[in-house]
Structure formats: C-alpha cells, structure tokens
Picture 1 (cartoon, rainbow, N blue to C red):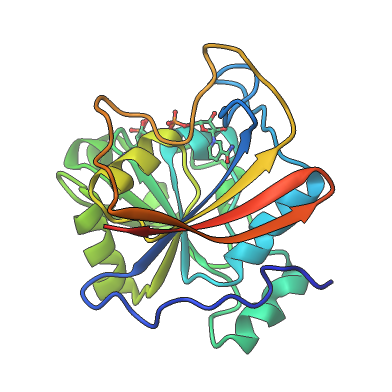
Picture 2: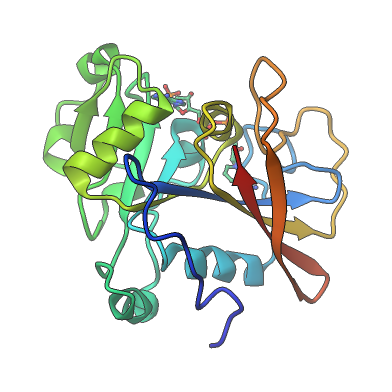
Length: 237
Ligand SMILES: NC(=O)c1ccc[n+]([C@@H]2O[C@H](COP(=O)([O-])OP(=O)(O)OC[C@H]3O[C@@H](n4cnc5c(N)ncnc54)[C@H](OP(=O)(O)O)[C@@H]3O)[C@@H](O)[C@H]2O)c1
C-alpha cells in the first residue's frame, strides 16, 4: 500500500550519535492519552497505527519508556509483510526494541518476549538490575547505565548495537528528557480530530521545567488522511 511516509530522506549521520526522531499522536487539545495516564486509551485511528508501522520501517531501533511498555507490552517491530520495506532500505528485517526502566519492573511473561524477533534491550539502573526477574537475562540484553542520560543511551546504542537511526515512541517522561538534552532531530506528530479535556491526561513531553527553546522548529511536511493531519517537524538546536 502506498503511503506518504514510504520514502523518507534523513541526514546520513549525526556524527557522534544516532539520528533521533519521535513519533506521537495527539488530540486537538494536545492530549496523548485519553482516559487517564494509567489507561491505554489512545487518540489515533487505524490509519495512524499503520503510519506508526511505516515509520518503523526507517529506523534501526525503536525506544519506549517503562510505563508505555507496561501498557502496550509488545515488541516495537513491523508486521512481517513490511519487513521487505526495511530490507530494501538496507536495514535488518526488524528494528531493535529498546526499553528504559530504572526500576527494572518488566514482567518476564510479558508478550514483549513472545516470538520477539530479536532480544529486546532493557536499559536499567544498577538497582533495577538487582531487582529484575533473573529469567530476564536469558530473554533480553540487559544494559546497566547508572544515570542513563539520553546522551549515554545514544552512545550505548550507537557503539554497541550499531544504531544509526533511533525512533522514540514515548511516553512524555522519556520524550521530555531527549528534548531537554537537545537530542531530538525530527518529530512526526499525528493530530487526531478529538478533544479529550480531562486534566489527568498527558501531553507529548512532560517534565519539571519549561523546555529549552530550539533555534527553530521547521514544518517539513504536512499530509492529510481523512480528518487526521500528519505533521513532520525538523528541530534545529
Ligand atoms: N499518544 C501517543 O503517541 C503515546 C505514545 C507513547 C505513550 N503514550 C502514553 O504515555 C503514557 C506513559 O507515559 P509516561 O510519561 O507516564 O511514561 P514513559 O515515558 O512511557 O515511561 C516512564 C518510565 O520510563 C523509565 N525511564 C524514563 N527515563 C528513564 C531513564 N533515563 N533511564 C531508565 N529508565 C527511564 C522509568 O521506568 P520504570 O518505571 O520502569 O523505572 C519511568 O518510570 C501511557 O499512558 C501511554 O499510553 C502515548
């Protein structure tokens, strides 16, 4: 099926770190959850879910935070019929899945590990590693980073796992850290025609301070499908 994101151009390299993009879907009033942070309500359409998979065909690895992963406990890969799209771009058939978890709270019986095409990479703290279920070491690559700053995470993924392009898929706590560290190059944002309104729902990036302002955030592409808008932004720091 043709899709406006089938063919995307990205800069060749960012030199000392992987290229970093983010993909999120938001309601018109800027909410990325619907029904409270703890419920897996999600404001996107089936076409947006397809778009998420198309975007995954361009990246070496896809990363999510512990809360997102516990709510949607699946490998962050592409459907088997899309593997060819990756192979044609010179990528492996499936992206690596990377999960951030300070606490180490990952269920070894999670669907994440069922038929995982590659062992998921779990980036955790020394404390998290101590607390993790021992059986996880046979199911995943466990990486211990005491601070796990975005820059350290990128260095690990580039040097050890040869990640050249990384796709962030949230949630807001993880997104905030990468933006605050000025380590986000592009943002793919789906604007879904819904209004959520609930105060307890989350927005795209959430932390303690106002984010540093990028030098520019350029609107690189606008696409429409039905009443959803698919926006592509380029961040210049
Ligand atoms: N609409 C969308 O496009 C979209 C996309 C993604 C997610 N979401 C929603 O976002 C919500 C979750 O967002 P959230 O902000 O609460 O959580 P999150 O960002 O998904 O995960 C936060 C967790 O990630 C781990 N973490 C974060 N930074 C870390 C670091 N530097 N090193 C190690 N671990 C780190 C910690 O896990 P531990 O707790 O395991 O220590 C932390 O509690 C869910 O409701 C989900 O449905 C929406």
